Image: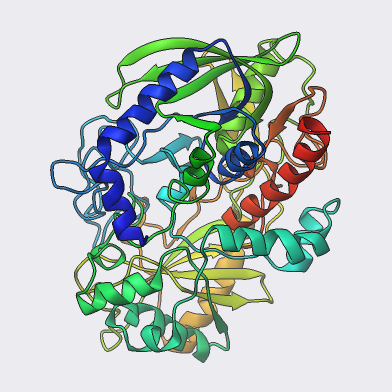
Length: 525
């Protein structure tokens, strides 16, 4: 079943989807389940599937909603150029990373507060984008499925067997996520990738190579979009608020397979607010809401095995709250440490009038610039504004060692990121070195009308939050939380702040590796 027909099927079978939500509510009200997974992003989805396959009755608690019901326009997700309440998690206005063009805020709109699919969690000096819904970040990312450089991975994870990861678990993750590559002939001929071909040419003049980046978006579907034979999604400015077609997300893959085992139930709009130890396992306090934020119930669930997969922010906050409130007082002092934005810096470049980037652009990136000297991996990002902008946009992923930390704010009852202004200076300097060279080779400059604060380099937000419960520090070498048997972290909180590339394939592969050991040693010894 292709992506379009799958989404269509889910929409048509809304009654069935509704029954899953009801089942989820009933399950969340029960006294005990053997395993609970908090969150439904990459690591959480792996845990849910592998537990279900092992016959372990498992409840997945997801704070966002299940995105399977069309709105009044017949679409599940809204587009980037006409966002509505489906776009953003309980805000009065959208918070897109691009502020606009020519200093006009063309990207953001006032909206009704709702359980939208994309959230920007704002801390002092850093905003963090996260997905909200069954499928987590897979719903809103650009789908760039990159395996990290082996040597850098080995330095980041010195206690993990790199041979096993690259022989077994990275290939497994790529198969499960349906990673594919854009065909050369399609890329070279498509007007929707004119922007990427131009950036390739300009980078080449500066002596930089480019590399094609795999994706979970179906390029077969995209080619059919361009031919007018399939409904448009990537070619209709859809990505950061969800793709209605073409993209293979976790709710269609890992999570759907988990539910088909008959042992896994997903409860959307259920947020875990407290974790406590019991004599035999863990007790969770869970808050259920409606899609418009009205409280439904406070519930209590106990389990034998608890897997935290709520992401770097969510899992870290649950552990910090439990440690500081005395619910899990023996948690390591390493909880909250080692956070980084994966060296994310966005760059806006100007092009000459004789170098148009194209009014029609695919929303899915497929090409990156390599600068090995400065260790910069710069993805060529689209600007699908529907008009000619002469703007080239990039997401640079750098390898800086700067790290932040989370602390618990008792009065606000939340984790707060400590990230100093200017702490991204090393990342910005690396990216500037790359793009100064490109500008010098082409007689071009930067754009100052794109990001807030009239900056050419945006270092105050990130797409790749990593760390907070780092593998081998807050946990053992397989994600077992130190001091608390049968409590696990299985998401980006395990990654020590930087990977050098987009992290979701690594998070998936690492979760597969950890779950294989946990199932063998802890659950079915």
